[in-house]
Length: 507
Image (cartoon, rainbow, N blue to C red; front, side):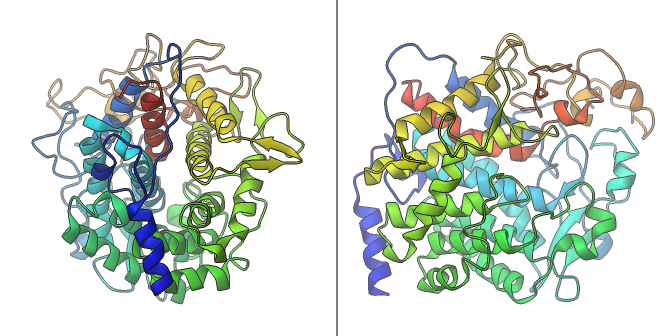
């Protein structure tokens, strides 16, 4: 305990380089280099819009402060079929489903964005906190009963058979859960991670009582996840697959969840858990895709921070694990394993590839921050890679997303002169309730799905799946792989944009 207290005091007392670091409730120093010369993009504008997007994805009773005014209340009876209040949360993408697995990951990443770079956000910090709180409030509801996590609201097959506004939806709002008889270690541990990330630092100073409630729930949910092991899509396959199957298993989420609880609580119990179980849970596996399903890379970076910044010597091997992932993305090195399009975009998968662009960019910038603080570099097959090089790689990806690409197109709705106009999103593609008060039925909306006209409601800040491997983007609403936005695309981008906006003096 004495060692942990010393580590905690060291983190708190280190001088902050943020202009407003205390407001972000971060626990360590931010390393933000200053770029000279004109900025390639208005990163501050993109930051504002990337956070605004989450208001367009809200489910439940909308607050008076709602800024996406073409949306209205929806899903107000969610959970009533089992007498549990599950109103609120986010629709994860372009449908009217509440999938708990990607929702929890989105909240973990949005909270991490605030934890690392919130102090740079200035006027946007409160909006970012509001977005985290909207999600964490819902996760508290979803974990209100011990040894149970409500992981989905809605029948995905029935929902996808309709094209209707969330305000009109009349498809079954079936509730699915994991419990001791239907284990779901992956989704439960991710939920614990999200609660811990929010509690750890996002609300630690601004709302200590709320933070305490979140971290207490995170501990309980993680204990449940660890005790009753199993992949949630094993028993719930007909309902969660093929949409959000857990392909990577649950080991990555256990390591990820323990890492967040260690950061949130400084409790040596979680440090011991990581030390004892890390290898079994895949700490050194060479899986280099970080997203809603596989968290290994993120866990390595997060745990490496404890060694690099907080000097927890027992976790020294995680720098090597983190370096291995980072080196896989550095072009021109012997360790490079990442494919890039001719236009320079990191390319992992054709379906919603931009999620890997934003998550990888965030990890590059975050690791660069840790390295700069500890005055270290990464050795990639004998080539020394500096924090500045990692930042340059990340910035190139964000710049591509914002319009520096062969098509000259921004992949963020509402940013720049040319951006997607026909995104795969029910609420955006159908007339708003204000414009068309009468109900639009389940099958009536398909006319809009296959229409070539622009969406009537601009979902500002939405980042779509992105171009194909040839850097081409058809901007077709029915092309969900490339035209659908999602919360887990935007969440890590928020942190990356905050860093870039600050580094160019825009914040």
